[in-house]
Amino acid sequence: MGSRTALVEDLMDRFPHVPREAVFKEDLLRGGVAFDPSALSDNEGGEVKPKSYFIFSFDHGTLPELGEAALRRPPEEIILTGGPYDLRRTVVSVRVNPASPYRVAADEDGVLGLYLDGKRIADVGVPPMPEYYRHTLASGKSVMEVAPTIQWGYLIYLTVFRVCQYFGAKEECQYCDINHNWRQHKAAGRPYTGVKDVEEVLEALEIIDRYDTQKASTAYTLTGGAITKTVSGRDEADFYGHYAKAIEERFPGRWIGKVVAQALPKADVQRFKDYGVQIYHPNFEVWDEYLFKMYCPGKERYVGRDEWHKRILDSADVFGARNVIPNFVAGVEMAEPFGFTTVDEAIASTTEGLRFFMSHGITPRFTTWCPEPTTPLGKANPQGAPLEYHIRLLEAYRQTMDDFGLSSPPGYGLPGPGRAVFSVSSFMDSLPADASTGDEGAQETAAPGA
Image 1 (cartoon, rainbow, N blue to C red):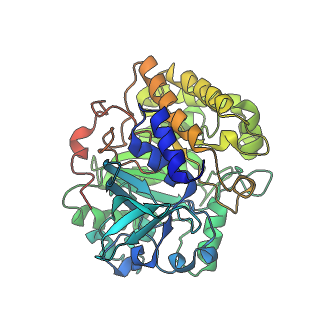
Image 2: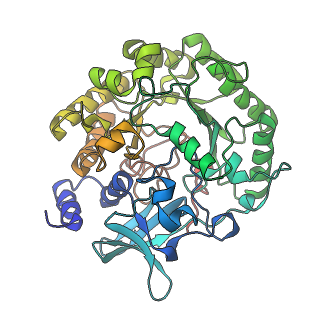
Image 3: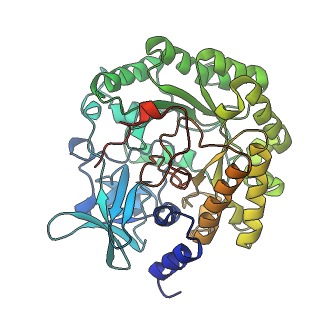
């Protein structure tokens, strides 16, 4: 097709049951967006919440390659509304790509818009600087550095260990740039704390709780790199778990507590539960057996795919199936050199994985793959997976949920186009707006307008 616009419109015509908002969102997530200088933030001194780089770079270039966007950060997220496609309110995580056909820029009246192939296709809202970002810890560290918020303020993202002990070509997941992201921020002289102090995390949460008067922040996620040995003398369950214990003791019931960690043995998973964690994310990354071995070599070496899946199922005995929500990286199924070469094959494989977990009452979710250029798969696949794959995945995901009578998972805000706040994929945008999550009451104020 002659333009990206033609491709997008063709897919909207071919898959009318997928919300049009999700088609644009997936394309922005997979391929990134360029920013005119008029659309960049003034970092932490401005009126717009800047991108925090909360765990990965989620960019299509290294910091030195981003130009002014490396000096004046883009917004953490953008909201799309209106335009010729009459888009409902859609929250999109920002992934910078100076070469993208999508561009955010201000018009002659200073109003931000999203442009595709030179045509304005949507109005753009940016997240206002939250009051809690304007305050610092006693150490001088910013709240954004210690406890950034994403998903339009819904989720506090606590990356308490910013590197991964799966290290080097023989262990690192082939799509993951967590270790490089750490290195590039340190090289740029940016504050980027490797292991976050528990007391500083609590201090940052105290500031958020004090100034988040609308209680927009509803959940926190504890996460970081895999721990194969120890950090600060603690194994993985105890390291991440002791943050949860401290948070729940200081702020009982204030937030939904979630942890993203490896698929651990049942006794370790029980420790998470005992520490106060409510939702467990033992990510399975990619379903296909061969691709798991090739693209997640450290996880295959230390645990193995079959044991990984067994542990995910076992964890449902501890948390309940509904509260076990493994993530996969949507798109790496089609990554060269080992991935599927057709969309049909990739969708069939991923759907097999969805059916496996959903048949046990476990509802996976996914992050749309961003091919970061410092990763092996990003270098080999700078365009990522075809947009058609992502659109058909949304269709297959919803159909599989319907087949097993499942509703949207808890801890993600409201489902449905125009309501969802989950920003790194469109799975929540693509579910019915009336699907129950079990925590709607706390979420009605979770996503104020731009």
